Length: 115
Image (cartoon, rainbow, N blue to C red; front, side):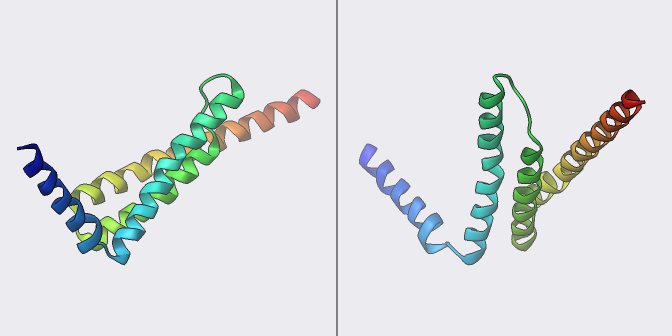
């Protein structure tokens, strides 16, 4: 039974990663790696700060990775990927807008504080 499972798993992995591997699959994987890298960036920034932080680069990695994965999903006509990635763009851009607003307000306070 274990040998059969191993053979089926080997056959499945060969089909997925060798037989069906295309340029689009490599493109989609690159997007997924970029998307996953955002967590490494966030972890590193938190370690440096000594507390949990979400750096600005996290949101740019999110947008870049999601954009590539979305393009892959559109090309593959995969509704799960399309909906998941397209809807997440609103969250990423909204967070960037909130960060920009906060920085503008901080700038105003600094300027008003100088008077």
